[in-house]
Image 1 (tube, rainbow, N blue to C red):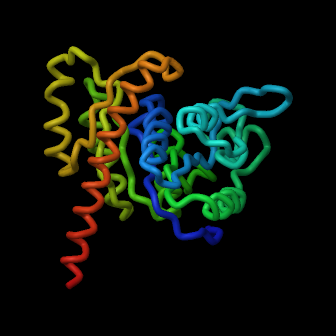
Image 2: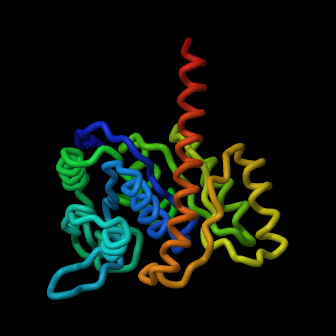
Length: 255
């Protein structure tokens, strides 16, 4: 497949070990924190399926949440250029709807945003092996095309070790770097599995746990939003340290 030309991007690609692990919250929170730091950061999700229809248009609800949390004023169709109705993998939803996922449309939106923003927080759809364009082009290939390192969002409980290690392994095999892992919806009173998983996951993947983001009920509630954003601020600082360390190591190895 011949891929459209892209502007050179700086940022991070948010993926998950599964669907509904909270990628949108993490992506929105990270964007919000970076903007609080005074950086020109923007949220971007190339394609969302399962979009509800409002006023005759499909609404990318993930981008709408991120736009609100991060204080963005971009049109939703710029933040998510491709919207699909059916709650299926994007490639499957597009096929069922008689449409195609056009990467040129994605590249055009990124080109437009790159004129106004320096840092991109890109959210994928589901996990790395979810088909995006067809059965041969997955979320993993999307991240490789964008040339962005991954931040993996995982659950804290049972099953997370296997799912996280497999996700990291798939990325490494494809040559896509992984900056670190975030355990989302971490409970105030963790179970034995939840309390031991972080150390095991870090050991098996040889990657840092960038944060344990607490479970909050409603991001629209000011108090809960601030608790969440405080946790995401720590994630952002740990992410910056991890990327700086990686850059230093790569520089040293090239000497």
